[in-house]
Image (cartoon, rainbow, N blue to C red; front, side, top):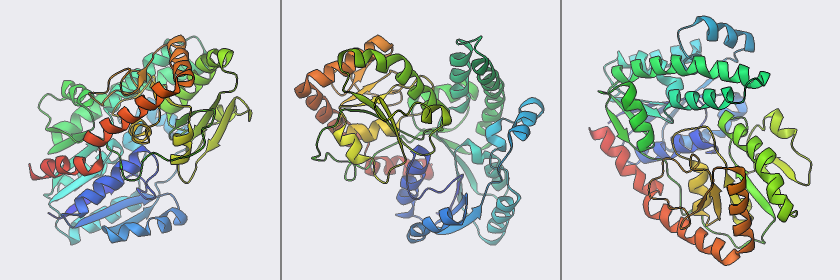
Length: 400
């Protein structure tokens, strides 16, 4: 089949959850089908960094999308029926590039990566190609959780603003996702939880589970000196990650350091939010930012923490940590979307500050238990979530 993939940002280098998923799905498709990738890149440097993808696909790059100001976002939040995510990647240049591709070539399938690209997918559907959407999350559910989380903190002014924004986006996204799912030919989902949530929106939607995965040959245990770091890795301006890191630093870390003052909270990832940069004190909280390779930090960590309170889908950061045989402490929401993970066998689950502090303390004081947990976690994810095992699920979705 001739396949056209639409990407909202560069999938190479594959860093960050969305880029990793797009890259590995592209690799799987390119093994069996000719693929054209039409991708945004924020600037010429990012476009140049994508050149290795030319070995996999016919790569077409559009610089953009144009930056939307806060004022523009505020106006559309109040007056547009469309959610912010449907407007985020609006670009005349991309529209023109897509139209030219569809006029010049015949594609059997157009695969849009994330709900951000759904407006382009709806446009492409008129060409006669089958329209497929890769849903990274049940987005309306993510905004619902964010709204309820913020509004519970009211009357804090920032919480009221954030909660009000998410409340509006929740209802807009529900309507938009319903329309898209009822219009396109198929949607890929990453977890059974997301499938159920989207089925509630659109009972007749054609959904197919293609979970996130991990490259177990790349993420493999390393012999490195142990550190006193509690590591959180992820894109650090992504709202659920910002919320998780702030909660852990403010509510959990002080409890941990009462017993283990040597432990530090280390944040690793792109574009740290100002609220996270403000935590950095070079002693108790260290905001490292983006690194070339997260594996040494994961391998050396006293524990990897995934204190998510908002979100959906499934956690690539969790799969990577488990594949590294790192001892993991996560909230139940942080481990959502990966069935079969067992508390006390593959990782530790904790949802309150006291529970999470106690779980971390157990891993720090009982290193043989932490090592057994790590090895069991790696065996679990490599048995069922290596990208090589995900590829046939994607192929089945295409053949349907």
